[in-house]
Amino acid sequence: MKKVLSKISIAVFLALALFLVITLALPVMPAQADSTPECWAVLVGVSNYQTITDLYYADDDARDLSQELSPVWGENHITLLIDSQATKTGILAAIEWLADNAGPDDTVLFSFSGHGASGGYLCPYDGISGFFSTFISSSELANAFRSVQAGKIMFILGNCYSGAFQNALAGDGRVILMGSRANEVGWEWSRVQNSIFGYFILQTFDQYDEVDTNNDYQLSAEEIFQYASILTTQYEIDNQSYGFTSIQHPVLDDGLTGDLALLAKFVFDINLNLPYGTVVLTLDGKTYTSMPTPMLWVPGVSHTISVPEIVDKGSGTRYVFTQWSDGSVTVLRFITRGLYTANYDMEHMLEVVSAFGETQGSGWYKDGNIANFSVTDYIELPDTRHYFTGWMGDYSGTTASASVLMDEPQTISAMWRHEYLLTLNSKYGTLTGAGWYKESETASFSVTDYIELPDTKHYFTGWSGSYTGAEASASLAVTSPKVVDANWRHEYLLTLNSEYGEPTGAGWYKEGETASLSVEPVQGIIVRHIFTGWSGDLTDTSAVSAIEMNTPKIVAATWRTDFVQLYILIGGVVVLAGAVIATVILVRRSRRVI
Image (cartoon, rainbow, N blue to C red):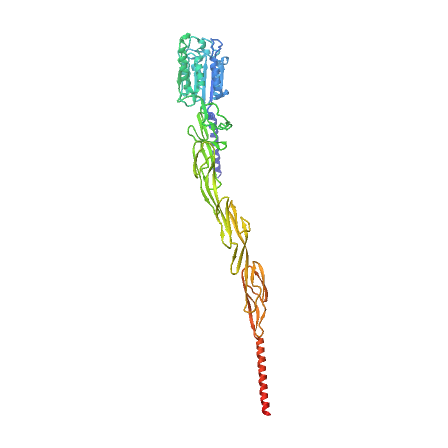
């Protein structure tokens, strides 16, 4: 086990040692370039030389070009060398500055406006005429740019014999704009010879849309050259009468596939005027309440733009985003250049209002469209009927289905006629007047006010519910469903039945009244009938009783027959008859004895 652990430890140690050796031995790799492209420039303009003939406008070429580019590229991305700043040492140091800052994804511009010497030389401020060692040769310039790793490099050379730099500077990813051919010295008037080509290059920034011949919203080196070279040549031809002895022919060398863009343009537009104060655009987090002027950007840099999806104007009008001019339908997007028009539809609200039924058609409609709307034209409830009669508001008509032009917000209300049910309730008698009535119509109604049955009497006492009154015939305005109840007072018949005697208390009684009833408990003398109780709707053994009259009542008296007196009488008669018979017999016997 120890041997195994020892071998593992040795292996780990050797691997770590090998890693350290390799790490220290390999050259340090440069950091990965920033994925966001940047633009860098060295702009040189020399008008007032230290040792040679001065120029009028060469310094303005560089200064004006810096003013065009620095707001977009950034002042810290541009080195401007004017006159005494533009020494040979200063120019070469500026190129080293480019090498230190520009990455593979970046674009670099080197511009020189000033004297040039035959054979391909730039004349810095401190250059001494006739001593080419004090100039910057085309090979020196090319060698200086070997350390610049930018993927795209552009040269603008406005000096005499600028075409002589073509072979030395040409290469992949490089575009060279030269103001003259290799053997062209320029005009006899040397004081202005280096300003014309630079002047028309600067004009391209003011004529952006005209120069952008492929309409890709980028200003490229190729387009700049095309514009400036034509105008330069034409200008010289037009001014030969002033004593010009030669005509410059600008030269282009393009070693780049595609175009080398210096500026990208962004133009924003909206097809409709949104309400004042509305945020119409958010660009890289900054909001705009009015359309911004066209903007110039660093080519290839992505920007975030967004527009509001819905803008509510209020009062029933809104603006709804539909799509961008290129067909995209997302309000948020990432762009690098171009014209982007945000297209909106103006919409108006249609509000269909009804207190009854189901409406159709409410909602938002595009300005100028036709909106169809409708409502249920008849609704019947158990006690109410609603009849559609027409529309009011922003539309008038009598058909339940209609349409309206949506050129502004619309509010349309349904109108109705109503019928209500009059319900009459009564447990007794005959009712008249119940049924359907138009709203506010007067309904007349009545009920039989007295009903007599064999054992019951019903007396109408009045109405209750949606109407109160004591008259059997009445009327009311039907402004809503009505329910009217007839109220009654009742009398019930108490019937007393008995085989014997004459019970008292029978007759008519009001509902709830207590009836007293009675009967003599003994009837007859020899054969007597004895009261035993009440039966039927009353159960009681007392001859005098009472009963609550909440319904018709039938009560019968029950009896038993008593024969005691009859038996006594018969016994007396028998005794008397026996005495008589005995007396007669004794009398007869006494007569015989005598």
